[in-house]
Image 1: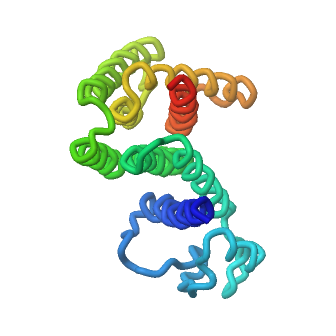
Image 2: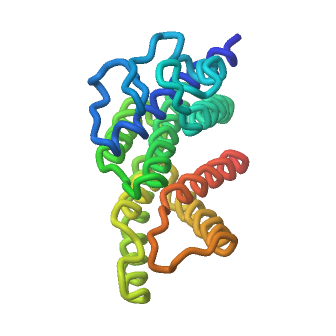
Length: 242
């Protein structure tokens, strides 16, 4: 029963994250309008049209008002967050630890999706993650402060050096400041060892994807999704080691 409640909670958070990935890049407030709506016809969703995963299946993937297809982004995010929530629940021993890492990965997933579709790493989400992490750590002592801030400043300094080297080598901006700040925040949650392991995984996966799906070298590639995947793999490796 407890596991079922955790999954349902994850699906609910997934629904909110899906809303964030639509509203934030579009410049729409998360508070107004209060009810979710169809992006195509602006039809306000009734309660039974806004149930995570189930409403998508019930409506057969189409808006009940205008019959336009509902983006697959929403059920995919909801399912991913449900699985992510269950994974963190099993991996972490105490509720402060669970909440600490759920905050991190919820924010990381939100940023990854937004960067994938809009090439933006929102500062507001980074700030919420960092302040929330500092507050939780102060209240519950999830990590040593030397570990957290060592990871933060290691990620920040290392990425600034990579940005400088990449810009010089490529003759243009090779790494955005959004990615630099994101890695610094990841370092706060993971420690300097794990964030650099995560970056290793991120760069390796990005390289494989670039080789399989070659693009114009001048086109911008969203790196936050790879950072998110790499950091999650590093987190799982760290949890297995512990």
